[in-house]
Image (cartoon, rainbow, N blue to C red; front, side):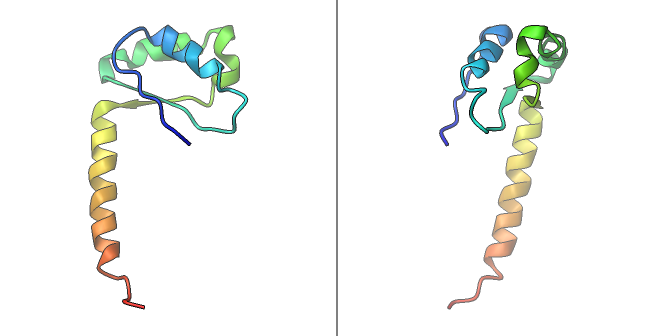
Length: 84
């Protein structure tokens, strides 16, 4: 599946774009600065977005942390691979 990034812009517009793919069995995320989390939480409660309530908010700092931890885990696991 291809990921689509929306950098900046209108939060409501980004959520409306997710409505177009709501028929897919896909997990969708809004990635934005932590200061926009309240805006997301208010908008996602709107009846228009009821079918994309499985959408989650991830702050940019959380995403960076997840990337770093995943990279460290992968480096650790790679050392355990057997040369078969």
